[in-house]
Structures are given as structure tokens and as C-alpha cells.
Length: 71
Image (cartoon, rainbow, N blue to C red):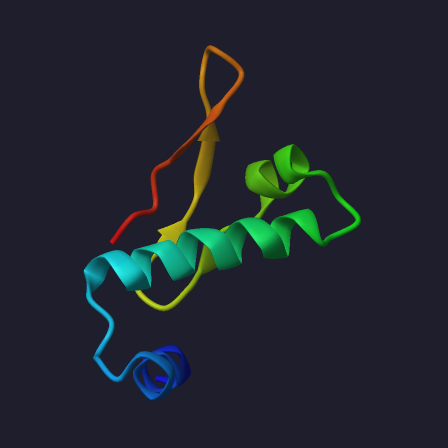
């Protein structure tokens, strides 16, 4: 796993669940923001999988998104 290897090299410890989840959430959000489509369009149409998390967003009644794809 590339993330775990790089994290361990830089921090001298194995990443815990919080570090991995933080990486997954941040990476997924940045990837969606870097696309031509808006975040909302991407969240509505694309399911993604990162190191330990799955992102499958569902628009809720308040206009936000909830992730129904967590592992």
C-alpha cells in the first residue's frame, strides 16, 4: 500500500485509522474539486474507492450530501 509506506517513511510510525480516514476524505474531495464537473455533479454521479473508504454520495433533503459507501 503506497499511502502506508510513504506515511511510515515520513512519520516513523504506521498510520492509524484516523490518519488513513483523513487521507481518504481529503484525497477524494481534492480529486472531485480538480475535475471539470462541480463537486455536486461529481458526488451525484461517481462512486470512488480510496485506501480504506468508499464514497457513494446521496443528496439529502437539506441540499447537502451523505456518504452511503463507507466501509
